[in-house]
Length: 233
Image 1 (cartoon, rainbow, N blue to C red):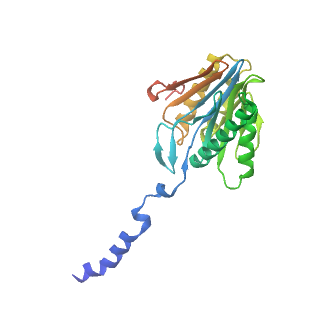
Image 2: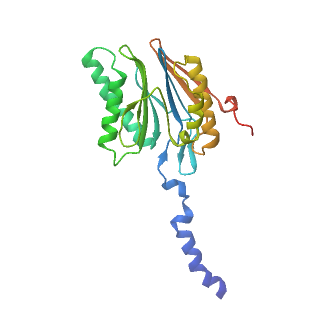
Image 3: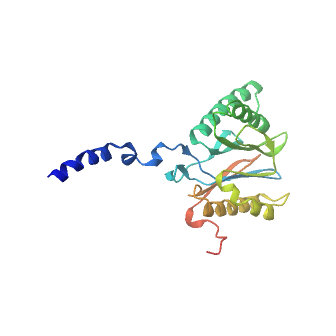
């Protein structure tokens, strides 16, 4: 009896310990964890992303849509904090909508990219957001702009981002060629994302693709059991 009594305070302390009752992942920020990609082709752009959202090591959502429409022919691909990137996308969508009404014509992709840059740079100390802005307009056709963490803005013919991008830079250097067709860009994007998802623990789920051109937006999903198999194991 004396032994059981002497153990009670320790037992009570263990039960009341917050760390033992609440898993570590509950205190982690919700992150899009991510591999995102965008490629220009003659007449439009192809964008793609995985679909895994994580809180620490816990997978919070397996089928997230990280391809976010900003206007009819302008999309952004989001990586970083889910809350931060969703908030910025909402703000830019609102601003670009008003801008389009004032002009009485569709907005430019470059204008959308500059709005993202302005928010990301102004709040660079508070935000964790890496954005790819891609779309089509009558002035410059298909365009891809990268807005990494910190708020820089640069146009690139092909751009990758997110935690999984570090695994596929070599693959992109070896396989990307200028003046690729729409189908070639779709194939390259699917292959690159599949490779990243295989290596990066924060990327996974399905692959979401979209092609944006003068004709509009075409979207497709590659399910987990249909992913391109490129590795030997």
